[in-house]
Length: 286
Image 1 (cartoon, rainbow, N blue to C red):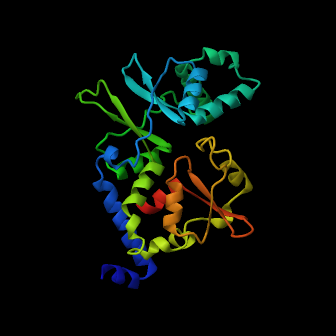
Image 2: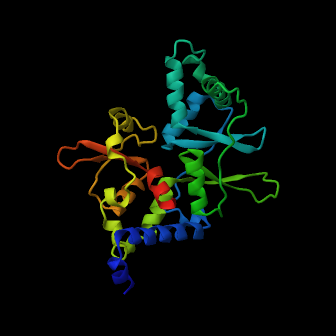
Image 3: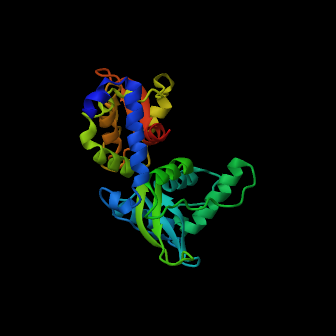
């Protein structure tokens, strides 16, 4: 009866119902570890490690990002990601750089982070000296709160850290939360709702009207093939059709390593737009 009632509603009302269900689901999940569909391997790196050794560890373990532990402070102080690797490669290619390939053998992560902060101050030109604080969450934070932290902090992952001490000492790294992991939980929870909520079967261009198909540039499209977070052995460029249903697009974006999809024209494969994980979450939470 409820399914029939929803089907009789205009699409705009169907979408409001769907979004209200998602928004109601996310705050109710207050244990990120229980909601994680599969807990991937989590490692932490000492800030005193040489950056070259650290990147070898990330590659060998098959993880794109790792939190950084500072023994002198007794806390997690940041993350090392594939983007750092790209920035170091750019720095090595810069003729005016003081960093050489030989120095990577001894150049520590903490030294690189300090140098990165110095470069950021030069680019910003505002004299800012304070480094960004680590964006993290606790194991009992809701998925909605964690999603907002990822979006507002413009980060790909948020470490889930827990300490049984009131002063926060002896923190434990439990998990790395990401939008793809949260989206996977949403897809799993509403897996049997596609027939109840026909809006999930609507083409993506109808369900998500904020995709600017005419604003896609060749530069943006080519950058997708160089995404630092794409898996080493995965498909280089992930695509969808503008006629694909919303639930299908969400399931694709929930796959590890996929942060964006190229929207292409059927047959010609002409690029029509881009939809990203952050686009979907801003739409759902907006």
